[in-house]
Image (tube, rainbow, N blue to C red):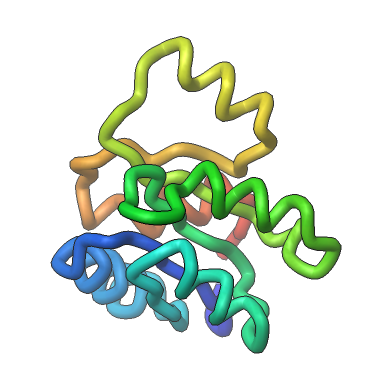
Length: 126
């Protein structure tokens, strides 16, 4: 799984840093970070990460709008997206599955198990 690159998109700096450290130190993956939906789309103009961890609740362009833009672009359409969100109800899970996301990670999450959850959702074997 070495050599994988993940784009982390979250407006909360401490959470971005925590996820970044966790994925780099525990899984050995490369990371890119964006603090907004707009910055995410800018990064994707030049970078092609293997996956995106996308917060839903962000000011300006929220995660739903970012996801819609990703899916409407033939270049980014195939990048798997895992949603990061604190707001998850049972009814939301069906909607997320319908959207075609690779998975959903609820905040707060256990940092030590995060790389394993991400790898499982993306089908990345050791």
